[in-house]
Image (cartoon, rainbow, N blue to C red; front, side, top):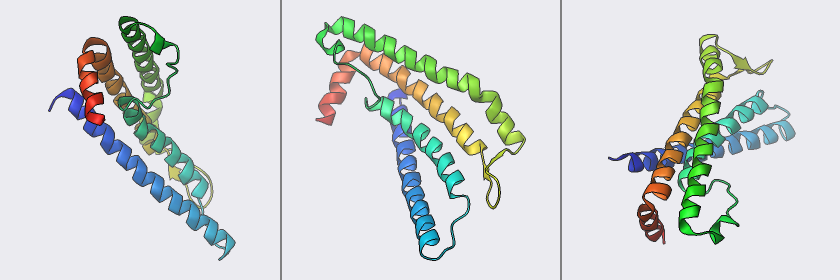
Length: 171
């Protein structure tokens, strides 16, 4: 298995995990609403669980969004430029994406380790949610984003014929 297919499979897997988590969170919110409104028994800690889950969902989907070309980009001007200039600008954008996610990793590495070692929790009262899963998912998702931006640099800048094959396969 080459690096491109590995990143594609891993990105799709994390996207499916994020979708399952989204589905579970929606049922948690629904149960909390029904529990509070109908039975007057709220599910304690729903806000903390949803807050942590949103961070996890976003970073699990980031790699797939990058690899599928769905990440936000303003290409209304770039599409009117010659192909070599487009590839250079794509490469610059991808390198900026790599730098951004690398800063997230370097900035969050120590805090992620400490949150696990010191058993850090979010929330007060009836339910306290551990914060390390969200912190480590941010690091993992950022690493996958870097991998996928690197794959995109290879495909779009150095091997544009591979991108044409991918687009043909999708059509």
